[in-house]
Picture (spheres, rainbow, N blue to C red):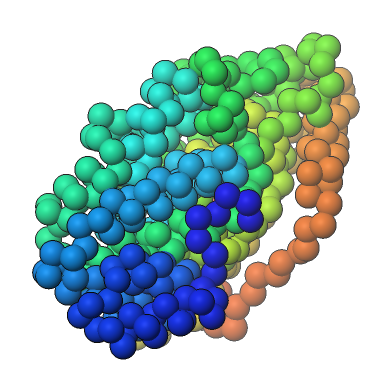
Length: 438
């Protein structure tokens, strides 16, 4: 990959480490750093070697022989972040993948590096709105100095030992220097010449409607009573469907091709049970006219669809994650329900059943809207669906279908039962505009 600071460990790295190991206390800290990054790139298979080099770097620190290597580590990190951003990565995604490899402490280091990048690139004034939103959500501070300054502060404030700090830093560097390019969804920093705005016209989502949907979903998440959760979720899903259909009718007058309105986003999926969470996301997207592509290596899901539909998918997916976690906790504390196979089966079944319910809800709401707006709605919705399918096929021509299954019958049955209790269509027929306005 062009621009990558470090390559995967090779024979030269082994020779460097071997020589450093033989030299013991006189080992060159810069050679140790190179070897440590190489071993960190191998992940858990070279964990012991990475730990050993962290101990050697810590010993060099105590002997005051590692002053220059701190600045060099910061430079390697800066170069890796610059390369990653030019290769399609976004701030939140970079923190997400770093957390997988280096844990919470590693994520803190990456956030500091992103802060230094924000200062270098004038991101506060030049970056796209979505980029700046991510910086805000991550609490990135662009005024914290260079990466070298930030790393020194992190090490001095860190409650971990010197060895643990070096180990974390090596994991961060190993992750950051081994990222492959991904699809660019926003202009990279090299293209920021003035306030970057999305290309092409896009109608801004109604913040008032989205606020009401968020409020309903928040109530569904917080209540301890299943009946109340069903009612709030039903109101939210009904409002989402009506809003999506109203948006489609408004967009129908747009002279631009519908396929030009199709956009792509990435959603971060976390462990544990990432495959079950992916299925839940897929179920939500499929029911709302969007498609999904899974990048397993980085636990990133790409979703493709109309802007309004993707807004609603993200809202509902986030809420269902909370509700599914609560439902799993309510299953009980029996030894059987605590096993990994049970919990995996529970969440897979939950996602399957939610998908079925959402599909039924979408079909019913569309039929009701067709009665309200007439037969003209059918070709409009079909045109939007076809546009998403064509854009998906053009952008991802070689995808493979993945399957979701489980071998724990008890977990499967419990998961479907929980999904029934979280029935998003419950009470939908009783909802009217006066209900939604309340």
